[in-house]
Length: 500
Image (cartoon, rainbow, N blue to C red; front, side, top):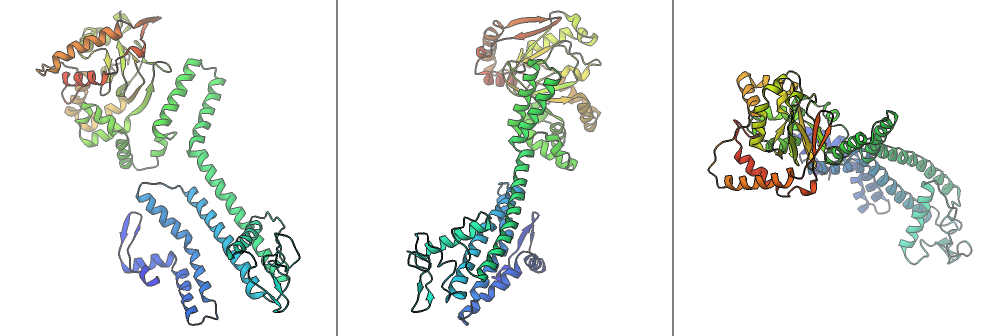
């Protein structure tokens, strides 16, 4: 086994090592000495009177290396095992192996060392009652032979179970007292077992502490702890109940989506190129859902993905994305769900740029419709605004997941792209052009779009709060086949580089 283990390559940190010297050095650090000692157990064939086969037990020392290798194999197949779980598994397995080895040593003392003594731990163990050394005990004393037998129970397994029970109760420092040492040698060995048990007890407590601490800092418990801190803050500040519900709704949705408390904090420890790769892997579906972004170079897609910030809205818990007159510098891309856009009745609520472009805004939404779904974007007016005043109101018609892109981040991305390409991307997001299409779906879409308008917007209720208009309508009246309508609209609306 020693010679064989020095012939095979090994994987370490994702690299395959085939050099002979590297293989030997790796094996020396990971179990060569226990294997070499255990190899002498074969001498038991030549010298049967000596118990060389006991040397094979030394290979148990290789167990930690075996568990690490097992975790590495699981990791290569996408199964992640935490260090705390690995440590706890090692301690538990070593604990059970220690119980087995201690039981075997108790048997060695009973069978070989104290065979001629009438009073031993085995002859005094009488679970069925009776005198020491009687046939009701684990081992029976024979006056004629002046020695006791090995096992007086139904089978050797029953005797092993009693020895294992003795070892486990001693090692765990419980000590029921039904089995106890009877000689000086047994007492000395008992004290050694108690010391080993105390060390194992400390190791188990530490391993369990690390495991529980990991759950408290990274698992579901950490999320509940954060939510509790948020609730305490909101109660202290007397936050209105509707805003509290919106905050809690957002945190629950983000936990369901990412299973982490702060993705940015997790990525901050990594180098910038790796952060971009991870962000793109997470946001890839969102990027490809928006045709304007999908047509961009891959490095620009990565930068956009890294700059996106997730947000979740729902008609009941958090319906308003923004209102007319709000100040905002974010552009939003819709990943799932539908939003309703409503224009102001009075252009005086807008800033100078909004009043000047009011007719163009109405024309833009006449072409795209007032219900936008996956692949669309909203809030693009902030890209050319000096004041950031919103020119329309947007609310969630269904549960909607959107991703916000800050204007500063967008300007930086455009700077990286260059003046001409950056301006083209900006114009693509701002412009929503209707192209002529001879597709047969065009006629069907006109009728379908009218049906949607009749179904939803006829039933919407207008609520006025100050000078802002918010449109609320029942979500149970929204047709289930919005996806088809959105797909037809995507084919109908054409923008340089993609669709809005």
